[in-house]
Length: 91
Image (cartoon, rainbow, N blue to C red; front, side):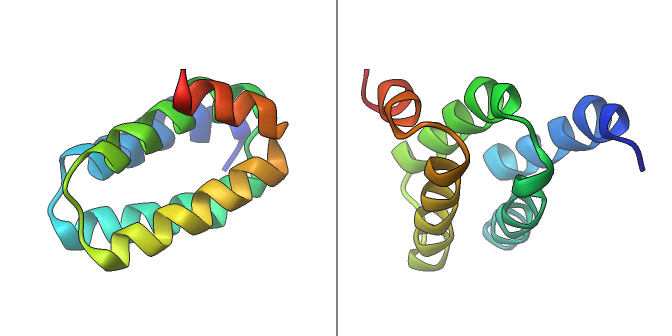
């Protein structure tokens, strides 16, 4: 699979599952995002992943999903400047 295919077709489907899926689907979709995060560029992370993670964080969620979210936020902050991540989440 090439990067453009992942960016334009697969990633939007994963994001949709994270936002609208059942608890199990959200969990598996978030784990998948955690696995493909190192291959994504900073612009995609800042433009689509961080707002999506913030939307999930605002929803009532299960503890397992919360732990996965925390791991994703930690990995995102390592990939993107922490100031960018914090500005998108808290402002």
